[in-house]
Length: 138
Image 1 (tube, rainbow, N blue to C red):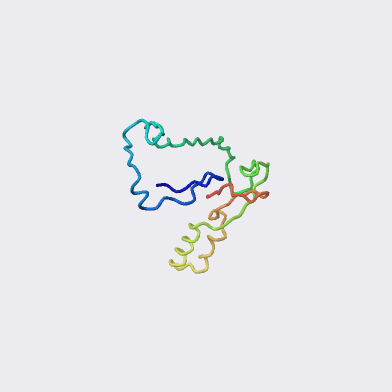
Image 2 (tube, rainbow, N blue to C red; image 1 turned 90 degrees about the vertical axis):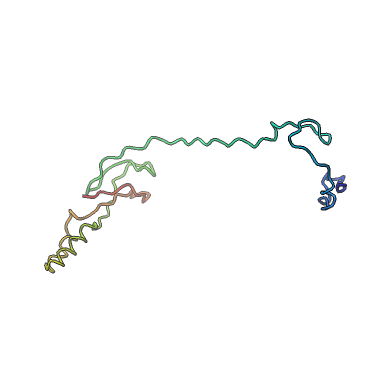
C-alpha cells in the first residue's frame, strides 16, 4: 500500500499514489490511544506556544541643551566626547516672512529674513561619525 523503503537510506522512493492514499485507514483524531502501532496523546498535538521576546533598552543618554552654537557632548552613536558640528538653514518662518514682505510691497527688504539668525535652525551632528544629534529652532 505504501511505497517501498530504500533500505540504504531508510527513505521512501516516492510518495504514495492517489488511490493508495485514498484507501489508507482513517484515524480518529479525538480518540487517544494506540493507532497504527503508535501511541499518542492530544497534549503532544497542541500548537506550540508563542515565543516571548524581551527587549532590553539601555537608559537614554541625557544630552545638554542644544543652542545656536556648538556644544560639547558625548555622541550617542560613537560614544566619543566631541564638539557638535553646526549646519544652519533658514526656517519655514523665514520664507513665510519673505513672502509676506514681498506681497506688502517691500521688495528690497523681502530677502532680509533669510539673513537673520533668529530665522535660522541649527542642526547639530557629530563630526566623527556624522550622526544627527538634534536640532535647535529659535
